[in-house]
Length: 327
Image 1: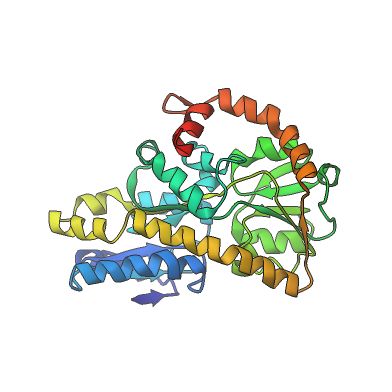
Image 2: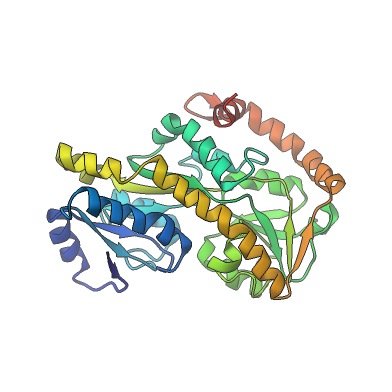
């Protein structure tokens, strides 16, 4: 596994020559120590090298080396800047309304559960992407990180600016009395510290992956929500240009087994992140059952509207829910 951390003028030429040698460029905007490298990116590369007998390899371009704007990961894949790219569908939720439906409140309970839900809907999710899906997984349901205000009751959210992962989350967050804004994960630490946002809604792992526990004084657990979608994609032209044998190698090195590794990693790190945050002085607030019921009641009108709406491909929110929950 080669890790390339710098982008120079020769990168385009390098990628071209590497691709012809069956070396795939893999782009992601996080650092190489991010848990998803160890859980998904590196295992994909290692498995591909193993099954191909070293005939196909992967070169990582970490830390935004090929693209410093996380929402543009899908675009650079389509443009051929990278052969393989990690993307958060929530950044471009209008393009992937079914994939991002996994974040609908109470759709699923854990990262593994949410990943299973997306795989039940794999056929329709696949139709949303003009690329080969290598892995499709989710993180743990979100918690609320706040700096100046402890979010203990519904009233504590009134008028607060809350960063959400996906546009899918906006109507539910605003039904709680807050103002929702969608921002890339790369800016959430700074924006919470500087007061650009009052609250960050994200899965617990962000406490460690993006050091979000540092500007945070309070974490509220048990709020209505579910996991967010993650995807590892391969340029369709690159995949189509492979021989049948090479495609078989890529298929064997990817798929549901790889996706579940990402999900299990998120479930494992969620509690660890909360424990580390608590040890660093962050107050962990668990909503009572009574208070959680108040939040569920507040979002019910938004939930009803989403269930009745057409999400995509002729499916309503209710249809997607049935598909993801296996009903």
